[in-house]
Image 1 (cartoon, one colour):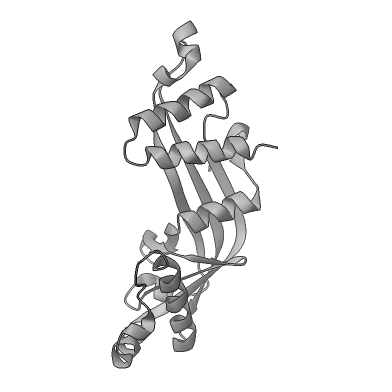
Image 2 (spheres, rainbow, N blue to C red):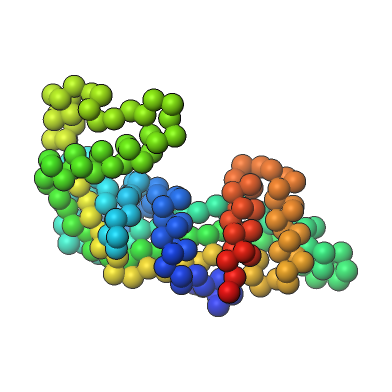
Length: 207
């Protein structure tokens, strides 16, 4: 991934934070007929990632394969009109801000009903936590759960290498960054509030 020095994010807590906040990843690997991409939610457990796929998915037959997982955080168009410097010099152009994390590792395929049930319980407990009456695995009939478990396999990816690119206007002076945050909040389009919050968090976490 091309990453100018302004946008390098190497703090493990920040990288893991993005994965936890945006757990839906694009998993890229090489199958028999070339590159393949799948889109899956993952759970970060220490230094490994856990997920699952249907048995019919080609990933179920790629135990040991080298994989790349891309976790995409907030993103959005940045207007040069939001930079105070633009109104003084005119020397600004539009851009796109975003935050991404790339995880490189090896795929381990897990065919173990106990492991899978534990994963599904963890995933549902996590993502149902905000519901008024959270759904649990135990809410479904046992035979239905057993049938579902037979139809999937688990995936585990150990993190061999992790890299982050947080392109959040760090190459601009503080007043321009403040202008972008204000502009995103005023526009308030899809994802704008998230991107503004992410930028604000970055400002607050600067050493």
